[in-house]
Length: 82
Image (cartoon, rainbow, N blue to C red; front, side, top):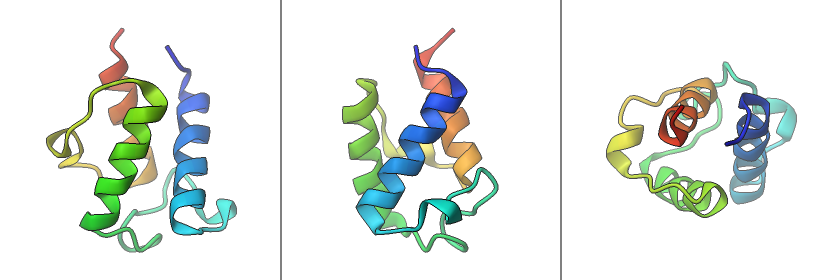
């Protein structure tokens, strides 16, 4: 199981690489849509990348309430289990 810091690094790296974002912009408080301009189509690519990186099955439903980078990190933590 990955630590919270490792998950955050994974998410930050995926966002930076997939969407050519400056890593400094990708803070835990950054809103995916408003701050990082990640739309629903982009989210599908992000989910696919994170599935491959974590080995955990993730669906769009798992991310329905995700609004910030922190929400995304918490969702991945929850999917990893205890």
